[in-house]
Length: 32
Image 1: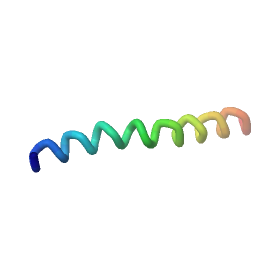
Image 2: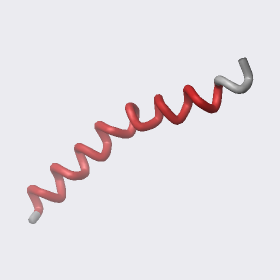
Image 3: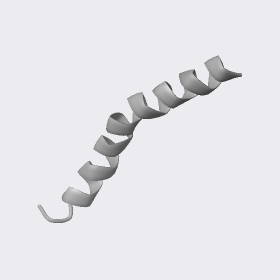
Image 4: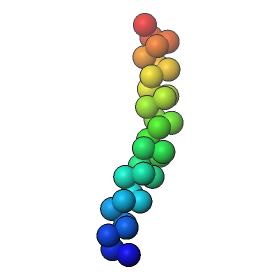
């Protein structure tokens, strides 16, 4: 169970940060 925790976290992090990177990308694209 302990070995599975580090495997689940890296998979969830990109899903959480994805909208943030998308928002930043849109802002940069609009500013340019």
